[in-house]
Image (cartoon, rainbow, N blue to C red; front, side, top):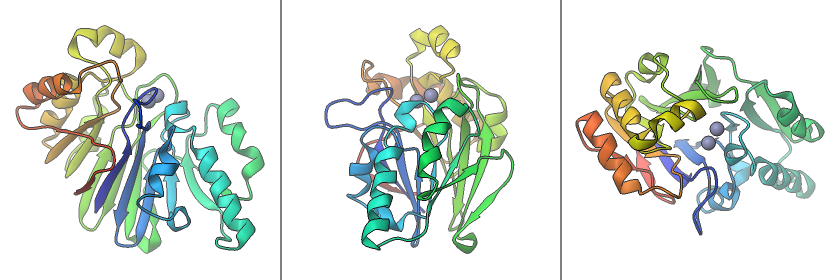
Length: 249
Ligand SMILES: [Zn+2]
Ligand SMILES: [Zn+2]
């Protein structure tokens, strides 16, 4: 299974950057996890959007969701020129309705499917599966485990410390964890429903995942500092998500 980081910034990107977006591929199966600002342009550097099997929107904060509208317009164009004739499956939370409702008028192009925690969804005849876990955040939000080719990727999406993530992430070959804040801003992180880099490291340590990759960086912070804090609590090396880079899981 391969992971390509399309965007790693939050809640706004650095120059030439993009917000949350991760392309996960197993053979010819292509799944996009989150679709924040700037992700659709980046996506097309790696795969034709017509080849997407599914999109997951972990929650309705705009830095995870805004570019879904660009993607919908791309699908709409593909319907127009006949290069795609099936709606794009999009897994998303049922709430809040005021944000989800923005998609109502695009029902012809998007097949909306409510995320159901604990229920595994099979894609492409079982070549890939998705399983969800509710996180602790200011909006309903779901971590997602992607399994394919005998590998397991767990993406925390946005979350404060949530003990249940320890067992959810267990056995992951790669834990892609948000690290929004440095340790000195721990209180702010907890209030906002985010992890500090040290908490991401602790999660990796407790779950004994093979690798930890930090993401969801706020442009104001020094990400090398975040890496150091995470490595200290994990007790081992930590990877920083790099836009445009593809990782073999
Ligand atoms: Zn976010
Ligand atoms: Zn969020």
